[in-house]
Image (cartoon, rainbow, N blue to C red):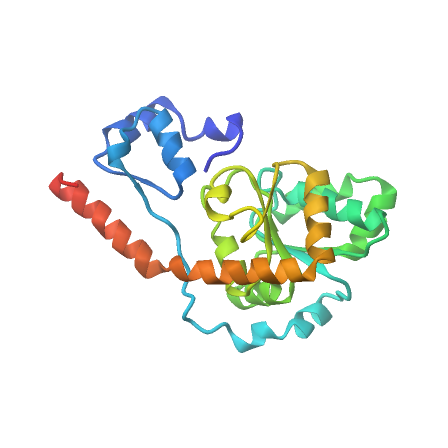
Length: 263
């Protein structure tokens, strides 16, 4: 993962950098991560980019295709933004709450559904908001915690759009999962996300931590359904090139290079 200075400190310790430099092969999940290794003194010739993948040919569970069921279970009547991941500041969960609250305060009803670990941190953040905002939060923000695969796909199938405004993702596999459902996505222009999301084509990119810019991007996708459909469709087409079989083949080649010393 990339992220701020305090995050980088956890993977740029002297002994870790020494391992990177001495390894026969170094695996990176994105071009941005590969550039990070190069900046630490790793030869580009020894860096292999191993992209993550999904299984686009596997059918989505039928129960996940019934968006009405998910909405009914969580009492959602309005459009909603989906989020999957650790419910932390660095993952963009706090900024996403601020953006959704800003839109609601402008008089546009919008829900937010967050699923993933560290829900208690997000709950504490919500509790610190002003009283007028907390009243909206109680109605509009749904914190599910860790969910199973079926619930994850139900969320993705039912959401109006998906957001991952994170600064610590070297790849962002949940974006691929959102594209499996042909959903438009918004990501932070940080970490490895720009390597995956092409701004204005497969999604929208906003500065990390900028709730105002994130709110603008959300409002745009809600106001321009044709654009949202085009971006979701473009993402769905792109995801066909991110399969676990392709990941395996690339990883196999990296191991071959490591074992034989030839490229």
